[in-house]
Image 1 (cartoon, helix red, strand yellow):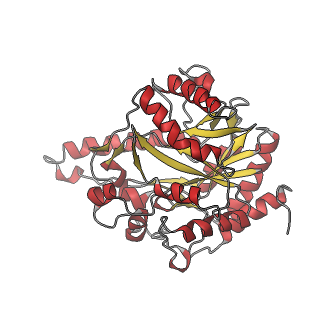
Image 2 (spheres, one colour):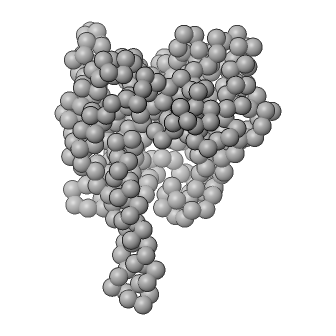
Image 3 (cartoon, rainbow, N blue to C red):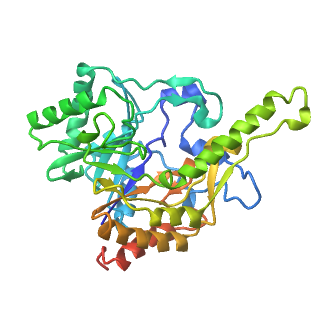
Amino acid sequence: MKIIAFYLPQFHEIPENNEWWGKGFTEWTNVKTAKPTFKNQYQPRKSLNNNYYNLTDSKSLEWQAKTAKAYGVYGFCYYHYWFEGKMLLERPAEIMLDNLAVDIPFCFCWANHTWRREWANKSNSILIEQTYGAKEDWTNHFNYLLPFFKDERYMKEDGKPIMVLYNPKGVKEFPEMMRLWQKLAKDNGLAGLVFIHQENAFDQDKEKGGDLFSYGIEFQPNDATHKYMNDRKIRIGLMRFLNRVADKIPLLRCKATTLHFDYDEIWKNILEKEPKDSRWLPGAFVDWDNTPRRKNRGNLCTGVTPEKFEKYLTIQIKRAREIYNSDKLFMFAWNEWGESGYLEPDERYGYKILEAVKKSLIANDELEVK
């Protein structure tokens, strides 16, 4: 069983974030300044032994790879950002490519979304817009990725590098781009590419270009919390309405509050879900609390423990093999500290979350006991 953990590279300074959010901004900024929004909320999260790493430091990348492999995590899926030749947060992957001591399988997920200020509860103004260009840009993008695709550590299926596209829904350029990339891959000595999407709502049978994807990922906990998110939209809509009339009736003014998910209930939804078809890959998640980013407009899970995570992950690994007939399971996440989805050790649990991964694999005879 290949547990593939999504990997956020926003743990180093870039000029754009310094301009948008202030000098010295990284993901750690949100994590360190987080405050509880209700009594006994587990915030702020603290990295074990103050390991607030900088991902332009090769030693940090080596530590991550060594730690992940020691506990049975197969590899990382790096989020990748490309805006018609403009890249953001690309340095960690480039450093990894040049350093064979970062010895862990990896692949890319093109996180093709527009960056807005609402990400940190500021406004809906656009910071950088996601656009898709045409053939020249698609070729340049492929050529940038090619050295990664050819690296021995890059994840492949039947000799074909895996490429995840975060959300292809409504992107009219993707089908033609994907066909071009398949041709370019073969022209450059590869067997082709395996395309996977991360958007739960994408219908491979009906969407334009759906037939070009080999798989879709049941991205968790998003997939399992869909009905809750509808409730959240209703709640926020009511609050906005009340605030519009609050100038005349001040008592009606209210603040947005966090939406609480029950950890057991979310996992129950995941474990009861049947795959849509054989082209869907199962997902799992550690925890969820995005209030470090979204403050009192965030969403979070309650009742999370390493023991529960181990119990549910053990079942999901078994289901991945027997129901999904898959050797891959995508995990949220390796280091999404700003959304509290991380396998890395923290002050409260130490290495217990990683130990839960290892125990779950052993329970399924998926990891040799050493």
